[in-house]
Structure formats: C-alpha cells, structure tokens
Length: 98
Image (cartoon, rainbow, N blue to C red):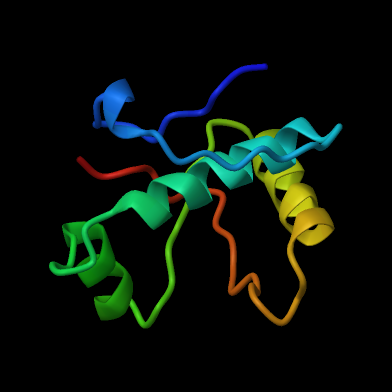
C-alpha cells in the first residue's frame, strides 16, 4: 500500500495516518489535494488564497485541449456535489499568463 505524503515536508514528520479505500483514481487525486490542504499552516494566508478571494472565490484552470477541459468538468460533476462547486464560464482563447 502506498502512503501518500503531502508535499514539502519530511517523511518522518508524518506519524499519523488515515487509510482510505477506493477504486477511483480521480478520487485518490482529490484526496491527495485535501491532505495537502489539511497540512497547510493556517496562521497565514497564501498567495493562492489571496488571489482566490480577490477573484470573488473563483479560480480558472487552463487546459491545452478542449477535450481535457471537458474531462475535467465531467470528473468534477461526478465527484463533487453541485452545492459545493459551479462552473461560471469557459473560454477557448484565454492563454495562461506567467
């Protein structure tokens, strides 16, 4: 069994574990992100959190193909309840900015 360690910390610091069983790889990736979120230092706001707040609690994800964007949207709808997330728009000509 693989142990998923949140990024940017030492393995020895992770003595407390939670084992989750699922046959859904997309869900595992969601859980990995939730584990990272749970490990963050809540005493200071990150740049990403400031950007999210400034954008009206919205975030834009970029994809190199429309198919990838459609797959993302399908997985979000499949895994997350509509009460937690909503799609506010999409654009076929909005390149990422550095």
